[in-house]
Image 1 (cartoon, rainbow, N blue to C red):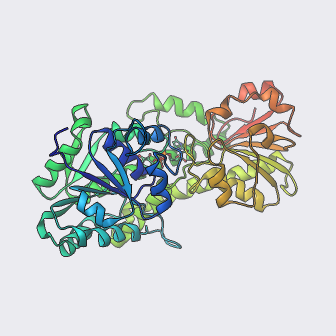
Image 2: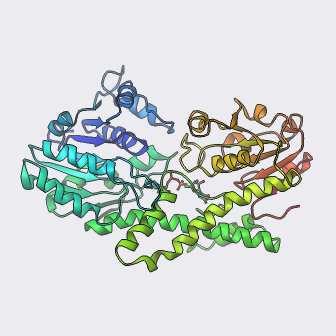
Image 3: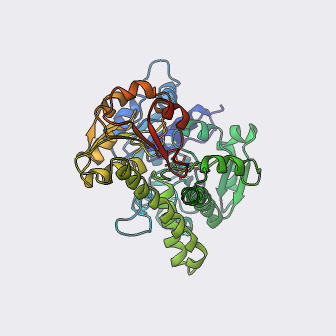
Length: 449
Ligand code: UGA
């Protein structure tokens, strides 16, 4: 790549930022990642991420300066001065969690980035927001950049939402299914076209919009996905009442191309650091804009979703004879989805926690999420393998659909448990196989026998 290529900084090195930084280096750019947590920077500087994300450590190690055999295109720092001096394009990738006790999201990290970076911009720069924010934020932040940057109008803002999924972050970042840029100048558009030239050449659609539309694409997309999941979970409730099978129902519906098969997996619902807080922040923002009626359906989407967790607890109580007190419950899965170590708002851990609070002795096993789960719920029991987790259990709950759990041998597990009861909270196990091995098998939205 010619030396005139824009130099890139990535501010915030969580799931989004660490992946984006490594992907930008992979695309050939010189990249400087910034985080305010020195431990993260230290780890990343050795070519390792603080979280588990398939393929990410390999990508980091391929580019981080100082790692043997690496291209050296990627470095990390805690210094804003260094970032401001280095970068032509600054990607803002910090998180926007739900505000304590409110639906709205907490913009303090995004605001802190702009307040720290903008006063140091003494040369032309494009600040590109990627964090998920309430619509209207880009307009406000653009004004702040203009006010604070010594270089004046040569410092600009753009909005470029990110659609990566945890577990597929590397693939989604290198080969995005679309690139959306909210811009206010040709210069900003041209710079972003240069940054994304390779994925665009490979076929990723590049959509240019105004600020509010770019911000809305992200929240609208996540709201649609949440709605689709809650729709099928509502159908699971109806199936249970009518003795239907939601898995077959979803399969049959999915053959209609207008509906599609994806995101119709019924179970204990959606969790994670994005979908739950994004639909709530979207409702809160619509309220501020006087459009709350447009999104009241999201309240129902949220409550269907949260109801699934309670229903799973009820099924567990039924399975052990009506009371959880002193019963031994094995929970397989702690993360909010497989191939991630993320336990933020995890339905699996939420169910485990509720069971514990109702007097059950809960033992959790997860292939990657143990440390994070233990930090969040230190009072739960933890076992180092699935087999040890189920030892002596009165009921086994399958709550995160890791491949490892699909490959468990029901005959082998039967030797370990006290009672052969299994509940599938993800509709990912084969009921026939488990029943054949003498288990009572129950799943959400499926017939009992
Ligand atoms: C989600 C979106 O899918 C991404 O496009 C978006 O970029 C990201 O949020 C974000 O805002 O950063 P992610 O949180 O990684 O990505 O997780 P998903 O794969 O969407 O899964 C979310 C939850 O829904 C998980 O708990 C999963 O188990 C659940 N789910 C998913 C279902 O219960 N059923 C389904 O059919 C699909």
